[in-house]
Length: 318
Image (cartoon, rainbow, N blue to C red; front, top):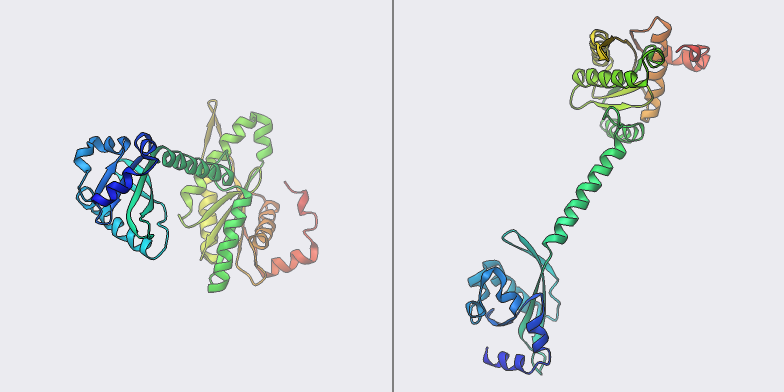
């Protein structure tokens, strides 16, 4: 320890060391504090006399273990990587460099602790901001459900897993009947209220594992993992009835709407969400053609009919 102190006194950087705003300490191989600068002596309200001659493990068990590791690294010719240290509510970046004698033997080390608490707080704030950006980038701003792009991405991932594990799945395609009339009669603000109300009804009807997305102005899709045609038809009818009974109040006016729902369950040609979406879309238009406010299921004969007729004049129906 005495020899290391002499080495320190010979350093040209003594004055710089003392005045550095970063907390610094010179320690011997036994982990004892030989010299500490003002910044470190103020650390935690300790005086220089409280630290000089004491071992790091007396202050912190973790610090004592780190000192042993540091000298093992030095003796092996390796550098000690910078690491973070939590002390109370503060976070520090710890940098350690060897102090060697003329023969190159590490007789001590120089430890610097930089307070990075505010940096970490900023990193956390940025991470939270990025999460919010990701949320808004994936959500429909009006209803809070997934937007089309995110809905398709999520469902495609689930479909790939379902195909690998040979699991079934279904899709509901929900279209609000005569929605244009609501907008034209009461204004778009009223239409927005209806969309929010429809979203609430759908959310209350489906399971937590089901995925809902707004895929058009007045269109919603609900992906049902591990659900066959029987279960999907039952759920679709439940959604239809709840919406039929729901009343949206806008400016003291009670607005009631109905929906047409197209349903399709996994078939061999369903390789992606776009495939089953097309079939559910066709089934929904069939429900419109039959009088609206109803559920229509696409089975294989209807699929073949769609291929042959290329939807005929169905596109003329609202």
